[in-house]
Image 1 (cartoon, one colour):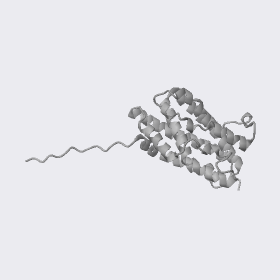
Image 2 (cartoon, rainbow, N blue to C red):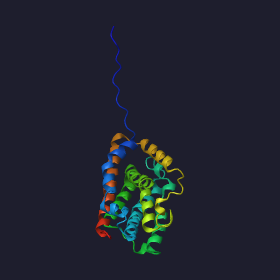
Image 3 (cartoon, rainbow, N blue to C red):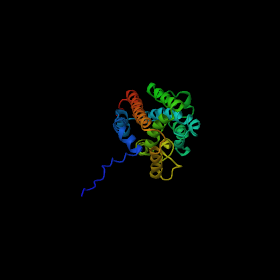
Length: 227
């Protein structure tokens, strides 16, 4: 009597949130280990370098958030537009503290920052799934590694805990960051696009990290070690 053998089963595909995190790991690590960030977090740069870094973030987040209202009803990007994530107001409060009133009159993006912000604007206008890649790269990073920057900034330059100067890193409207990140990853897993489009999103995520690394490189060139 023949013995029935069940057909081999294909492994379950990994959730997209895992795919995008794994695929961009090398670029993420490269950005984290840039000379500028290493020196900043090592306390080897002055508060002026931190202020300039914060100013560059303002240009990128302004591009992200100016586009947010127009994407709130989009079936792909809309679910990611969450008011509790918005950072521009906090960045402006930090910059008031770091640079003084009227800093906007003198604020200028570095060339790499201008390219980065322009790419965010382009994806928001023409490719909502690409905007999601930039949204994920920035905001989920803020909820994770950004907290390390906040802690070090408070200790190095004497900012009041979660006060002016580091409010960008404080998400007062998110009571449980771990739960929020799980919800965010579930949105990524449910992204309503096909596999080919998901691969394009992964590629754009890598591009976002590369754009970020170029900003760090230009900051590093402008802020050699102060100690």
